[in-house]
Amino acid sequence: MSRPIVALIYDFDKTLSPKDMQEYTFLPGINVEPNEFWGACQRFTQENQMDGVLTYLYLMQRMAKGSMRLTREALHELGKGVEFFPGVEDWFGRIREIGKTLDVDVEHYIISSGQTEIIEGSRIGREFKAIFAASFYYDESGLPVWPCSAVNYTSKTQYLFRINKGILDVTNDRDLNAFTPEYKRRIPFSNMIYIADGLTDVPCMKMTKQKGGFAIAVHPPGETELADDLLLQGRADFSVETDYRAGSDMERIVTMLMRRIRASHDVTVEHALQVQRAHSRRGEFVPLNIPTRGGIEDEAEVE
Image 1: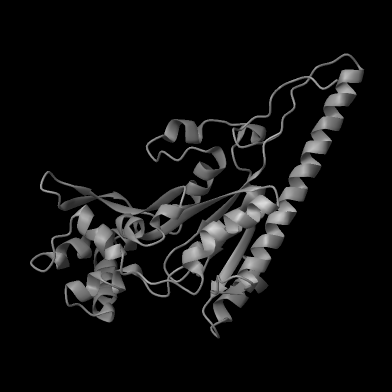
Image 2 (image 1 turned 90 degrees about the vertical axis):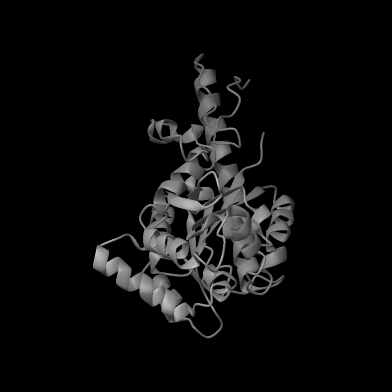
């Protein structure tokens, strides 16, 4: 029988990285201060009643003209300068190995309003099963001309369902919206751990919790107010410092949750076996409907 998959799902800015990703290399590269850029984004959003993610993509493109050739390759290169909280860079492999000792498979995902190409080019870009974030469409000269995707705080929730059903192709809406029995879904919500820092992540935190998964609100050292609020309001299960090093509270809590997910999976399997055996004793056959990595357990009759 296949091992259960645990999905660790992260925001990026101020969850894995201390600052907004544009502030490391993009804004210095065009000689614009962060306060100037984000202030311009806020004004433009209000004046034009525009989505904030579409605003920053537009202003990145506009403000880079004459200072930086904003190609996909250039954005990947900018990602190399992004910095991370302590322990982040070896966190992903370490947690996979801990998962193996607990007999679960760990997959890492990003759902972020940040910029896909910068995340892909960062030192941790290869660690993720999928990255769902904002991105550009590039013309024949390689320059951005239009947004391909814009992930805001409400649209983030659709990607939880993509992970749940195993439909990672963002163009495949048909299968995403089609009815799928719970036992055919690749990763149950109860196997998800959502890790994020702020109010824009509340819809995903609440959905993950309501469907049986877990939400961790993170905070930098000493800045606990928002994360504690999310915990006390029932929007998150834990308030944890952004320290991903071995032996940290983050590692301890995630390990505890993976152990619980494994135990819950075992209970679910045992219950399904009991139900199938009860039917078998009456001469009836029912498939063993247990969620696994492929979606469905083998529908073999239990003797």
